[in-house]
Figure (cartoon, rainbow, N blue to C red):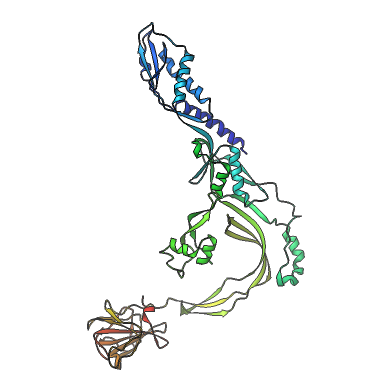
Length: 521
C-alpha cells in the first residue's frame, strides 16, 4: 500500500524522466542556426536518411521532439535511441516542401528502427548496498510484509511507506507501527505454577494477579534493522525481480561479517552460540586475538564474527515471563598480602529462585539485550565469597644472555659417571665467565660450594619459589643479600660434576624442582 507520499514521488519522478527522455538522444543541430537565408530549403537527415524538406530551419528541433514524443507514448518505459540529426541547406526555391506531419512521421519511422533499449519503470528497493527492483508499489509493500511476517504471525504491526525526512530528494522509507492500543488487561497471561515451588505459590497468588495485569506478554515493538529506501526508477527488464524472487533475496540468510564486542559473562562458546557460528570459525577469523580455544577474552574486546543474517533484519522487543534459578554475583575480599594468583573460597554459593518479567530485544533470532522489569524472588540466592590477592606475582627470566640449551628437564642418559639420569633443571652451554643474573628478585639463601653443583647460588623469591644456579666459576653475592631481577650474581663456569662450560638452572616449588620452561618469560 502506497501512501500519498508515494504518489508525490511518482508524479514528480515521472515528469523528470519524461524530460530526460526527450533529450536522451544525441542531436546535432549546429547547422540549423546557420540557415538564415530567406527562401532557402532545409533537408533533414536522421542517421543519414532524408526524412523531409522544410523552409523554416527553426522548426527542425520541434519536429524531432514531436517524433520522439510519439514514440515515447507507445511505452511506459524509457526508450533509448541511436540517432544522428543533421540538416543540409539549399537555396533552390523550386525544391519540394514537405508538410510537418509527413516529416514527423518519417522521423518517427527512423527512430522506431533505431531503438537501442527500452527500460521499464520500477520501484527500486535499497537496503544498505543491496538493491532489488519490483514492478509495482503493491509488490514493494508485500515484500516488506513478508520480511516481518516470521516475527509477527498475528499481523499486529503495520508497515507504511513514508517520506524519508533525512533526504532532500523524494525518497520513501518504512514506518512500522502497532495496530490499536494495549488492552485493559483482562486477557493478560497469569504466572504459571512451576516445579517444586508449587506448594509456596499460593501465598503469592493475590499479589501476582494484581501486578501481572499491567503486563501484556508478546511482541511490544518491531522494526526493520536496516534503513530501507524506495525510489521510482527505470531498469532493464532482465534486472527486474518477481515478488517471490525478491522475498527470497531479502529474507534468505547469508553469511555476513561484523564486529562483536565482548561483554561480561562471555566465553568463546557463548559468543559462538549468540552469533550462530562455531568456535573454529571465531579462531579462523581472529588468529591474532584468538589463537586457540584457551585464549583469554575480556569485556570490551572486539572480535570479528560471521553469522547468517538476511539482507533485511527485524528488530523486535518481546515482553516475556519465565521462572529460573539464579545466582548472585561473586563477592570478593581483597588481601594485600597475597599475590593475584592466590585465592580461597570463603563461602560457597546457593542458587536462588525467582519469577521474572523481562523485555528481551532480538535481532532476527539472536538475543541482543534483556531488561528485567518485574522480579518476584521466591528463594533468595546466596553469593559466593572469594578472598583474593592483589599483589602482582614475580616473573622469571632466563639467567643468561644467549647460550645453547644442551639438556632439558626430565629423564636423560647420564652424560658422565656421577651425573643424574633425571635432570632437575636446564643446561645452557656458554663460555666460562658469562654473566649470570637473578631470574627474579629475592633473597640469597645459599652462595658457595654445593658438591655436584660446584659453586652454586640459591635465591628465595616472594612467591615462595626458589631458583638455583650451578657449576659457576665465581660467586658475586652472599647469603642473606637482597637482589633484584636481572642483577648480576655470578659468572658461569665448569665446576662440580660437569661435562663442559655451562650454566645449570633450576626452579623449585615447595622445595621440588619443576620444569623451568613453564615459568620463564
